[in-house]
Length: 585
Figure 1 (cartoon, rainbow, N blue to C red):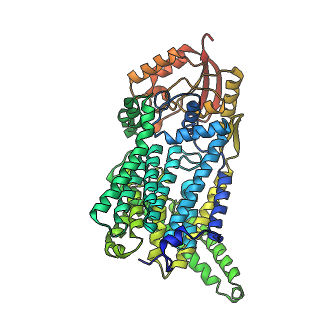
Figure 2 (figure 1 turned 180 degrees about the vertical axis):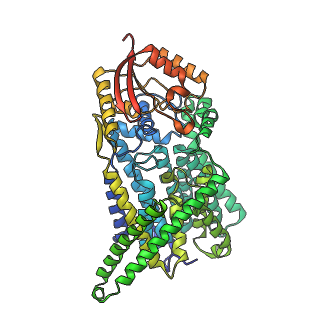
Figure 3 (figure 1 turned 135 degrees about the vertical axis):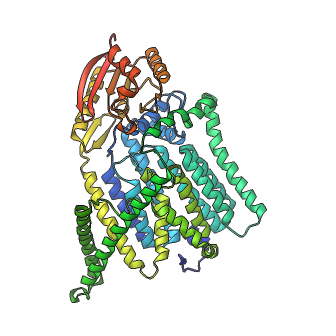
């Protein structure tokens, strides 16, 4: 492996005491890209019927005095919800508070990621790697981004995981125990945000702790115990405080809903198997291989054209021509692939295939890695990658929130594999990123239809959906209702109307009320504290084998439709949004 740094400056002085008084222009380039994508992504979401409503409503309900797990249901840790509740307390009940908080988290993740990348590569490669992470992981209108994600806990946890690995590396550079304690605290906070991230961070930090320094068995054991104890204390104390008002049993059933989660096995999206994993590895590798060949050919062809006499006087002009010509030729190549083979993806869009390749590379280069001064950090990243994606049997599901360590290791290994052709590979990666960042920006530009209320604004690409949500918000506001039940999805309406839901459950996917008894208990609880309005979208759940909500929760459907008065019907893409009121208000 090529040594990532030829400097003779000790690592602790180089990375901890440099002072950063000098301007890092490559970091400036990263921040410019971050600003551009953050601006383009502001308030835009492709999925308004999924978890974003839960993620907004829970902090608001905590702020109103309700207790997590007892009064409101969630499967994730408490840290993100209470942190966002504090943000709402300080800045008001607005969606823009969530956008701002997550932009701050994304910036923190970007800086930590860049620091780790630059630690193991040179600045140009670290910049390209970080911009790749921003494009493919952090930003976008889908569920699995860092701005409007399906789980804010996943974003908080990602930041704490990167912080844990960074502080562990600082411990390696200095040998100071306080950095190891900081890494352990970050592991605990990652677990408080989202469980699997905490396990991945703790496992990787323990591996790194035992690989740094030529230390004896006793020292390794002592340092490992420190990490375990500190991390567990950080997790246990907040839950112990919650358990004084919410029973441990309730907390356990909320965080580990085995009976409910078994329903997800009907959904092929959540099913894992060796055959499915091999299938995904093979198809993502083919996308990478054919796409990379097109880009490499384009870059080489552009460099050949730029050798003509009129480019010899200006290196800047030659470089500019190389990039522009490479992008044009690559886009032509991708267009041909799309028409002939119906290939319509990026070679870097999904790096699932790289997981087994990285394991194989580490195994084959074990002896060389032992002699490399950065071996411990590399092994830490590998273990973090594997533990984080173990849940999905080692392919990257929920891509944005699970892929950052894969992206980082991919660039690191590519950087070290290609010392002779490093410039050519860097140019090829740049072309890929330019093409697909422009496509993503073009996609985000389509999200121009606003869903507005006095509590914030969302943007969608679906004009009909925007009209339906705006009409529903107007009906709720006109009714002056305060207690509004939204189901099975679309609970973002509760936050955007400043109302509250009387239900402990926020999103009514099949796992929420998995059997007849759960439905009867829910209806009984609603009759004790009936909502003034019910916003009912009988949407399909074909991914789990149901044509509509009424098919898998018929008792709840009958309670709504037979015991309430229909007061409004709003056309919507999924069907209609029906609004019901109590018969006698």
